[in-house]
Length: 326
Image (cartoon, rainbow, N blue to C red):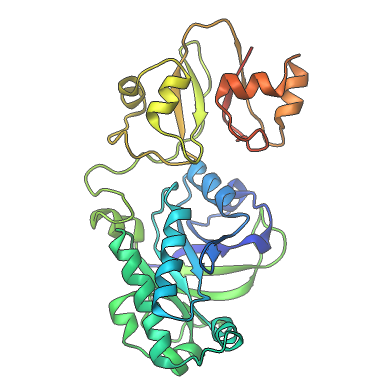
């Protein structure tokens, strides 16, 4: 099995994920952040967009830990960032030479024993939080610090830039950093997964997915009708909050969207919301729209739009979302 994917961070800028998916890429590993609590500036947008269009994602966190306890802190920081999103691929700890260099700057001697302790501490915490754990390394770092045994315990994402795979025991191979992908400016890392992670993770009940009741998959935004408008779930939303905002009930939202667990919804998913019969128009946001432009177009204000639609950040709106216009 060879599943085609890629991985990105802030260095790829704003990715057009619809073009990426149309080009045949089947998953993406997104940098969520690094250190104890530094979030990648593009992670939330990347995760929400991938969830919206149904492109499976995993996440990785770069290691700047210098002790097992700080590796646990990094795991907690990672979980805090990713928990708003649907992840069907692993949560990975990225440990490499820059980790060693940082530790030296902090006066810490980096040894093979410490390297293994960092990976074990991070991955154990990820598993404790019911996510699928993975670590990332390259051939030199494995030989010098980690050895082969960790890959028997945790899934390995292996970096080696070559045209021919070298047979290393791993579940995912990053084979180039010079990939060219529609929708992404400049070079990008490309990967092959040898495991059907969405099935493995869901069947194991990890990543807060379920083998028998899969979390709702993002669907293309349905066209508004006389009965429904669409809403793209935003980080921090709850189904009860959405129901209250739009004058409906949780039971009605779960019924029309076939949601099996009302306590688990995912940022970036599009759901249908019943019209309440109020006297307002609707507008479906298009790529490139801003709230101020929409307000000017309809002769209203940004404040009126944010209040009517429950928008907490007027600079963050989503293509495909339906706005109510006063």
